[in-house]
Amino acid sequence: MRYVILGTAGHIDHGKSWLVQALTGINPDRLKEEKERGITIDLGFADLEYEDLVIGVVDVPGHERLVKNMLAGAGGIDIVLLVIAADEGIMPQSREHLHICNLLRIKTGLVAITKADLVEPEWLELVEEEVRQFVAGTFLEGAEVVPVSAKSGFNLDVLKQKIHDLAMGMEPKPTKGIFRLPVDRVFTLRGFGTVVTGTAVSGSVGVEEVVEILPRNLRTKIRGLQSHGKAVTNIHAGQRAALNLQGVEKEDLRRGDTLVAPDRFTPTWAIDAKLELLAAAPILKSRDLVHFHLGTAESVARVILYDAEELRPGESLYCQFRLKGMPVVAQSGDRYIVRRFSPVETIGGGEVLDPSPHRRRKKEGLLDLEVFEKGELAEKIAMKVRKARLGGMDRKAIEGWVKAEVPAIGEALNRLTQKGVLLRFEELFLHRDGFAAFKDEVLRRLQDFHRRNPLRAGIPKEELRARLRVPSRVFSQLLQAVQEVEQSKEIVSLKGFAAAASEEEKARVVKVLDEKGYQPPSVEELSKEVGMGVKQTSDLLKLLSREGSAVRINDSMYLGKKVYDRMLQALKAHFGSKGEMTVSEFRDILGTSRKYALPILEYLDSNKITLRVGDVRKLLLK
Image 1 (cartoon, rainbow, N blue to C red):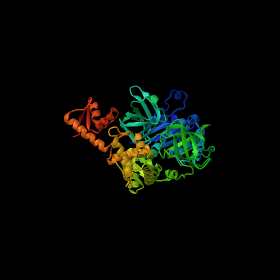
Image 2 (image 1 turned 45 degrees about the vertical axis):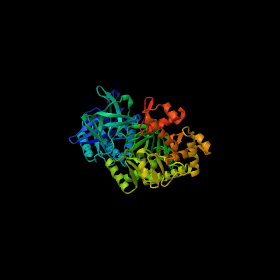
Image 3 (image 1 turned 90 degrees about the vertical axis):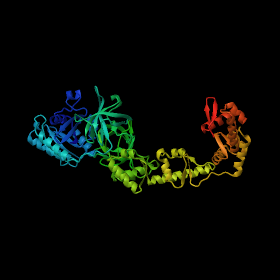
Image 4 (image 1 turned 180 degrees about the vertical axis):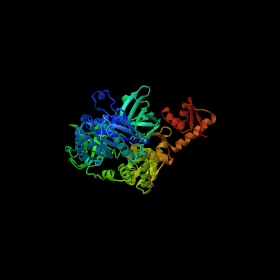
C-alpha cells in the first residue's frame, strides 16, 4: 500500500472543504465554529482510499488571517489541489497559497475549478484559460485543470482518477531517514490520554518505541498508533498518524513541537539559510523582524543578511535567522516560509542550509553555505565536520543535521574516512584540518605548560581535555594519534620530557624532611626553610615523590623516604608483639602529636598498610 499526502490550497469560500467531503465522504471541518460559519478555521483531515493507495487529505483555511494555520499543514504535502471557484476566479489567497507551495518546492499538483454548476460553459472556459495563465512559471504549469461541482457530483470521478494517477506516478518518500513528525494537533481521548497528530516527514517509528518531544526536551513512549483511521504497529514517512503518548499531559505540548528519534536533534535558536523574496514583496532590510514558519512551528525571527544591507524583490541571498520565543527543530535541506512582520503577508522562503551554524567571523567567506546549498551529501558532511573544528561531530549529530537517509550518510562517512578527509574515533568524526588544529593546540599547550612548570611531569589529562572541549570517551584515542605526546593514566606530556631540578635543590629539601622526621613542615613552611617559592617547592616535592625520595601523605604533608621506612619498621615491631594499635600508641611510636599522627594513619589506611577496626588498627602489610 502506498501513502501520499494531498493538501488543498485556495481562497476562502472557494469550496475546498465541500470538495474534500464530496471526494472522501468525510467533513474535514472539526470545530463547531467551522461547521456553523461554513469556513475552515484550522487544519482539517480526511482520507481518500483506493485499492492500492491511501491519500491523506489536509484541508487548509483560506482566510488571509489564517494563513499561518495553512502553513502548519503544508510542510508534509506531496500533491497540491489548488481550488479556484468558477464564479470568482483567482483571488488574493489563491495567489498567496500558490506562492507558499512554490517556495516549499512542492513538486506536483492539479487544479480544481469548483462551483462549475453556477456558471455558463463559456464563462467556465474563460476561467480555465485564466487559471492556466495564472499557474504558468510555477510547479503547476501544465497541470491538469478539472472543473467540478461538489453539489451535483459533476466530474468528481474524473478528479479522483486524476489524483490517483498523479499519486501513483510519484516517487515514494524515502523511509530510511531519522524519524521526525511535526505536531499539528494535540488533544486527549478518554481512556487513552494524550494524542498528537501529524505527518511523518522522514523515517519510521513503531508502538512501544521511545521518542523525544522537542523543543520541550521530553521523552515518552508510543502507546498506540493510528493511521487513516486504523490501528497500526508502525508508521513511515509520508503517512498521517495519530500517536498516543505515555506519561505526558496535553498542557505540556502544542502545535509546532516535533516528535523525533532520540539523541539526534538539538533545538536551534539560529539558522543559516538561502532566502528568496517574492517578486511582489517589499524590500527586506538586514535586522528586520519576520514571522518564520518551518514545519508546523512558527516563530518571530530577526533576519541578518550576509554581504548585503537589503534584499530586493525577486532576489535571493544567504542569511541567518535568529529566533525569538522558542527554538525550532530543523535539518539542512528543510524548506521554510517567511512572512512580513506587519502587515502580515507572505514575502519569501527558501532552504535551511545549516540549522546549527558556527559563529561567523567578520569578513569570513560564505564557502560553507555554498557547499551546503549545492554540494553532494559527502561534501556537505565534510564541510560541517570541518566547521566543528576540535570538537568534531558525533555520528548521531550528523544524522540529525542533514536531511538524508541513514544508509546514504553511512556510505558518505565511509568514503570520507577511507580518503582520509575525516578521521574516526569510535562514533566521533574529526576533519583532518580539525585534527591538525587539535594536534597543534595540544603541542602548544604542553610546551607552554612545561616551560612554566619545569618540575612537573605533565599536565593533568582531564585539565587538558576540558580546555580543548573534547569528549572524554575519545580524548585518549585522539592523544594516541599525536606521536609527539606521551600519556599515562592521569598525566600528559611531550615525548622525551623529563622534569628536572638541580641535585643541590633536591638535597636541600630532602635534608629538611629528614631532619623534621615525623613532624614535617607544611609546603609553605618548607619553602621558607629552603629559600624557594611555594609553587617551586610544591612541584619539587611532587618530583621527589615520583622519584622515590619522598612520600606524599597529602597535598600539604610529605615525609622523607628514610623517615617513612623507619616508621614501617617501627610498625612491624609493634605488631610483632601486639595484634592491634590505638591512635595514642601510634603517636607514641612516632614521638609526635595527633596533628601529624592522624593524617599519616589515614594515609596508611588508604594505601592498605593498616586497617581500621573500630578504634584500633590492624596491620595488613606483611
